[in-house]
Image 1 (cartoon, rainbow over the protein chains, first blue to last red):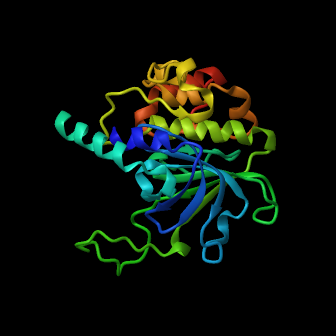
Image 2 (spheres, each protein chain N blue to C red):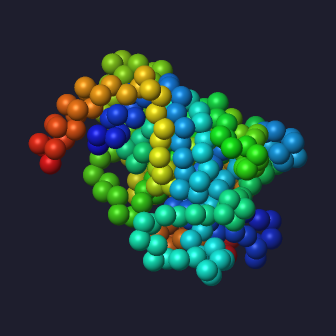
Amino acid sequence: MLFFSYFKELVGKEVTVELKNDLAIRGILHSVDQYLNIKLENTRVVDQDKYPHMLSVRNCFIRGSVVRYVQLPPDGVDIDILHDATRREARGG
Amino acid sequence: MWLSDTDKSKGYAVDFLSISLHAVSTDPEAYPSPCIYTQIETEADGDSDSEDSDPDGAENVDLSKITEMRLVPSDPSQLDTLFDIFCECAELNPEPNADGEEENTWFFGDEGMNAHGIGNDSEWHFSDNLANPIGQANGDHDLAQTVLELHINDQRFEDAEEKEQQERGGDPQ
């Protein structure tokens, strides 16, 4: 639940989602659910030369299970809050 | 998972679990007609030289090998509805090992969580209907008939299929 809670805080910010098939998509995080399925808006593929297929796509839904990384905006990372949250989670577990 | 065809003997079956990504594509340069673009995750996809025993679990998938599928509806105005239905279906088909204890609730930053009370289940009504997700998705009959002849080809959704066939007057496979 920690990641879910954290990603909720990032809604509206620009993130880059890297998939397990190496495709990386940048976009505004529109919403996220408990499975970490991600909806992006204003998407663009990071490496369009290598991957031209999705040039026409402006919003997309990404299945949580295929996400490898989510690259975060620097200002979207509040280390203090994350510290607290991880400690809480560790205690609760 | 479902088939679309006027010729009932042909079609595709794609499990929602294997749809890794879907999106609305409207650029005529990418494809002549507006369509739903999907990427299909296929594990047994050809290359026999792949090393399953890679200790790092590193997956290097050749991008050209990604399976893509485009759904081109005859009525482009249905695209957004179809996209939403794909989203619902993806949510209703979580990974088999995922614990489904909690109701699924999307978070929308622009809706104001205080006003709506994030955490109660009112936002996504279809979550009430987990037992029959496809029946729900196919409940939009306009869409089912004008865009696709939806057929569920998965035993898990036998009920949904029966229901759908009843509604349509029951055409056997």
